[in-house]
Amino acid sequence: QSFDPENPQLLEYGFLMDNVLRVQNLSKTHNNYFELYPNPEYFTFEERVKYFKSEYLTINGRNLDRACKETDVEVKIGNGYCNITSLSRQQLTCRPPTEAAAASDSPSGPEVIVRIGSSLEYRIGILSYESSNIIMDWGDNVVFGVIAGSVVFLLIFVALLVAYRKKTSESNRVLRNMQEQMDILELRVAAECKEAFAELQTEMTDLTGDLTSGGIPFLDYRSYAMKILFPNHEDHIVLQWERPELLRKEKGLRLFAQLIMNKTFLLLFIRTLESN
Image (cartoon, rainbow, N blue to C red; front, side, top):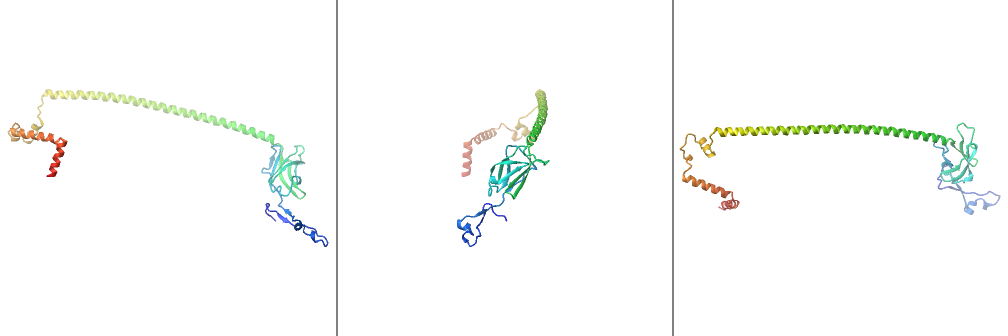
């Protein structure tokens, strides 16, 4: 029957004697009981063979010291015994015997057995004393693997760096070539534009000279407009520019135009019109 190890079962005890009732239940008389705890449990090694790495051996378990002491526990390794140094709730620590003392007939190595009293026995696993050489070989392999991996990584990094530098140099070279070509093209376009502008100036000068030297007749805007609107009417009344009344009207309109351009006059003029 399982029960909580934190709360042990209290058992009464006493003696059955002829006509002696006061010793039949000593627990009630002296308020003292037997405390019943669950059996301790020792766990096996996680690996099939445990390699002895240090001076002490640690065995894990549960409820190891609730109902027993170090003197109640015996740890046997092969043909030798492991000297128990400490016992706690979840661990037992002992000093294993020498390899020669622990030698056994088993081909796999000495077996670790924990005995408690004469009824409880736990087979923990196999203990190997060859840990130092194995660990050393394993460590050498790890070191060699790390060095080899580092060298390969360094070579890959150098190769990538060289490829990157080469790619960057090629890109810079292409960029410089494009910049030089753009500069040359810009200079060429500027020269062609300058030459074309000079040729255009020369042609305009020649055309102006031809027009001036040829004596092409031209009229002012008013005369041109009157010739277009009233052809073959040279004596039309509109063409009589020198009449005094026309000169007065034109002068008045010119003065009025000047006043219109004056901001103060324009505001007063608009306000006067609005008031009327």
